[in-house]
Image 1 (tube, rainbow, N blue to C red):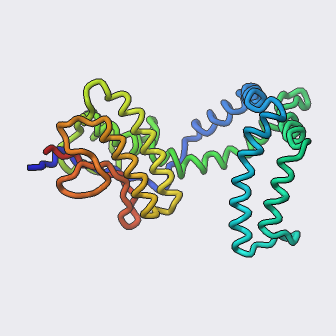
Image 2 (tube, rainbow, N blue to C red; image 1 turned 180 degrees about the vertical axis):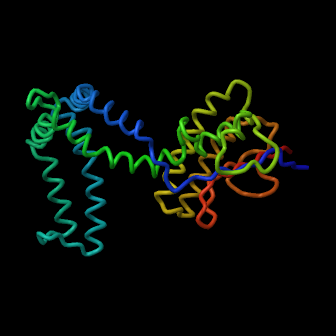
Image 3 (tube, one colour; image 1 turned 90 degrees about the horizontal axis):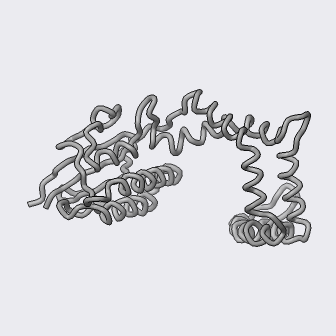
Length: 270
């Protein structure tokens, strides 16, 4: 008879602001790596051929979709262009022979030395974008991962719980262990692969679910990926994980319950 071995849920906050130190570290590190960023950019797109293959041709289908959507909605720009006309113009701009030269000149200007400071414009852009970066991570990845200075987030706690880490309960701030305690569901030798892989799956899923405003189809698709991943590495000692909540099921799922967004886990033995 199926028996609930362990059950817990972990609350995901609306946002989790990075510390001032974290923000400063990101800003300073990004600015200090300006030279490396410029070098990588040149290696990735060194010439017009690479530009057309990796950037222009990849961008054109995306602009066409956007233009088609605008055109279907009867959009007309302030310059009197329809969505279709905007798409045609964008295609033409990216396909011109001097498109790469314009691209290259724009980035070269960002990384040139000005007033004795290398990559001055790039670094100024980083300074201006610091608040935007902070806002972005606070509402996306950081609300799921947390940080080791203040509190670990639901994605990390969920992985600790499913790999039998006894620290889980002591690290929890929001949530509850309802039944049992942390349990290692992994097959022998796969714990590390499980941990790193599941953290990534949970963060990716949580971000896309929130961005979709908790669309039910998006949640089902994301929860299916999570449970398929767990099932692929789990021990046969437990009921297979699946994206369905039921007393006899093992599952690891994101749930939206009223205003509460949480990660809920249940582990069942046959």
